[in-house]
Length: 296
Image (cartoon, rainbow, N blue to C red):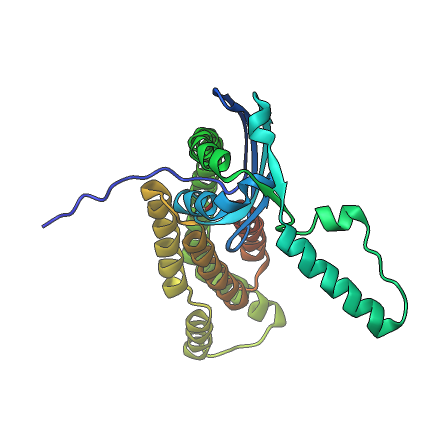
């Protein structure tokens, strides 16, 4: 029974989105930048009152983006002064004061932290909980809108990468065909050149012995298995591109296998025409690996 596989889009890990959303509470300005990364790494620059919602924001982003270096910034401009109301955590201030007194007694001199350092210490400034809860739902809603733009940005870049890689796969398959054609011709060329060189020396050599040497060399330089595996890897690469999804690591692994087979072919047939083809293949593989590393 044949199972039809769903074709998914390919997304780049590189993207940018800026979205400004306004409601009755104020203006939310989101900026999200993403770059390629082996894993998912999310960094936030958020207003103090949003810190309580950071876990919800992180989870929402993680459900959508599986890999990449992700920088998230939110600026909030309130429409009303009520959403700017804050209070001081006096218990924490008392605890900090006790610590300062202990340090002063320990070192024998007065330790006076600056007001900036006190105000910037986490938990000293406490936003109004009632208004914070109201804003959190609006923040998550506006986050969804900027993520939609980011997804579109990464998808557009992914389409470009997919087209680039498909074209390079076609080029590689064409070069592999050149290797196959040359492999089929080189034995006859080598036999003729060998006979001419022996004839130029003016000596008689047993033809059977000469053919044995040619057969041994042909067996040593046989690349049929490597060519077969190389074609399989390239066709698998093309198939993975077509099916799409989160395939960046898989594509990179396939290219490593392609590179390994190409190296083996180059070491087996270290003759000038083949070497030129191998160099061209390696250049294309490096181009592909560089771009594949940007795929999610």
